[in-house]
Structures are given as structure tokens and as C-alpha cells.
Image (cartoon, rainbow, N blue to C red; front, side):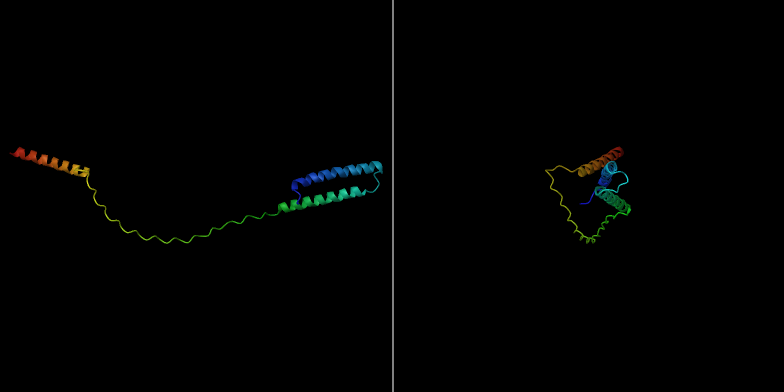
Amino acid sequence: MPIRTATLAHQIRRNGERLHLATVSRAHSQGADQPASAHEQALLEERRLLKEARAQRQARAMLPKQKAVRLVKEAKPPKAPKAPKAPKEPKEAKAAKGNKPSRAEKLTRKAESLEAAKRAAKKSAKT
């Protein structure tokens, strides 16, 4: 299982604390001029490996990242044009409800009656 980058700094710090305790205990018990013990050597080796791993991760982080592939949409084939519709037949006039005249008929009748009134007034003035 890969070690997270955030845990390496913590592991290096913990290793340094243990290494310091081992060095101080050796210096107190045997003297500072004595060679390092096996436990101290193991801690030094572990510290070196942790620092190498951290350096590798930092170098890997500087490399360019792989970008996601852009999706290219395929062009759809053009649709065939629709056939023109046949012209509709003209609608038949609706049967009138009863004998009620339409608005157009009312207007024409009104215009005719106005003209007839004008003509009638002119004729009566001449006679």
C-alpha cells in the first residue's frame, strides 16, 4: 500500500526523535566515542530511505501531469429533407345559425344604406 505524502514528514520526524533518543542513551551509557549500535544503524537506514522516498515524490510532483483526453463529438449525418405537404382543400362555409348576418354583411349593408341615404337626399333636393 503506498504511503501518503503527508505521512512521510511525520514519519521522518518520529524517526528523528527515536534516533536522537538512541544516540543520547548510547552517549550516556557507553560514551560519545563508541560506534553506533545496531538499533541506531537501523534507525539511520530507515531515515535515509524515508528521505529518498520524499525526494522521489517531490520530483514526481514536478513532472507534467497527464491531461484528460478531450472527447471529440462525431458529426451526425444530415437529415433528409421532408417531402412537401399537399395543399389543403379550402374549408366550406359553416352553416349559419338561424338567419343572423355576419359582421361583414352588416358593414356592407350599412355602407349601402348610407349611400342610398345620400342619393335619396340629393334627389329630393332637386325635385
